[in-house]
Image 1 (spheres, rainbow, N blue to C red):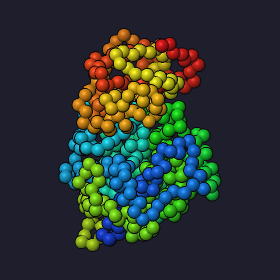
Image 2: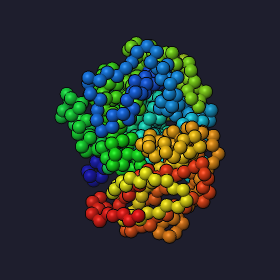
Image 3: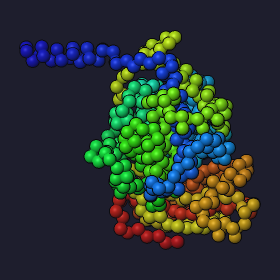
Length: 535
């Protein structure tokens, strides 16, 4: 009887605990808007600060003796020089505009279409997702790694900032939006990168310690994922060695600098993987100890995607401190472009401030909070951990073969393993001689130059992909930059063994070639000792 009474008491206690209202964050309208403005301004400052170093330091950090510029007129200089630098911002704005026009409950499909048909340059997982959607492969399949070799890249990570700004302190709501948006272009660790960033921003509304912000943001990521393990390693390393960020950087290089998905990075020093770059964000927040300048400097000096990572750090600290507390040294150059619309949008920073402010108020009401004429009350619920999803399972990089050749009719190769991806692209030779192509490193050609040279070229190459004498699929390779397919062909999770692959170009034209730079081969075996090729 006593046991039964105790059990009933425990059940009643659980019901009482569950029924208790969550803790509440109260902010004045001024503070809420100030923090939202700080997030937008901070990420824009960060992306410009890192502009000259982006992927110029891959596999090394930027040494202390090398200065990184910042001065009056600097933001406007990059605004005029390289509009595509601001992809961290204009991708966010595309989704903000969609929520503004369609409402907070707009569907994943509506968001995907707005993203896929936006008129600006995209790369990596973003462009692969856009291509898939334009070909009828809709989310979440558009971001799934079998359909998107860039699924672990950091694309969602660099455009998830807006989610935290529209869900201040509301992690469950932020994660729901992240799931709707992030699977448009990413999955697995690539999705978790964006979810982590959204959680960083959301948490920064109610916490003032970067360590607490990082730990709470990571709590939404499943511990079984490699993303969680990588960021958790940064937290643990910092706890043991809190003095020198470079020691943590070396630790990350040794354990986590191993991109397995991105065809541009596998077995090379280029690494756009979400795990490593998010780890640099966490590293900068922890070792920067809340100092705005030091944190941006560390995030940039870590290298790799060294404009996107300080962009995230600058935005998170911008929320934590608010726009009004960003040092004038950083803020003044930004003011020159605050009223200018970003490429492919009809929205400026000034407009984005107010749009996110309005959306945040709507989210607060929807979550059961209160909004008055002068302040908001935000309910702070504990979020559930996101479902586990891990990309490239049983798919280990085996070998990268340099080809440097052209497909003009047919091309075939054999390999041992369970998958492959071709790094290459459709090229237009109308304005550039073959002699010039052959003499220039292929790392500097490809779609980034050829595609942009003729952005409205209507030509589409049709290529059959045959695997083991069976037609696997027909690939469409548009020349138009916004439509382009990043890789001519790939296939994962074949039966482990010997395979023959043949590409057949069905409609070749004299002004076009398909460049085959490298082929990356995969195996289900982590340590494969019988790999060989036979051309």
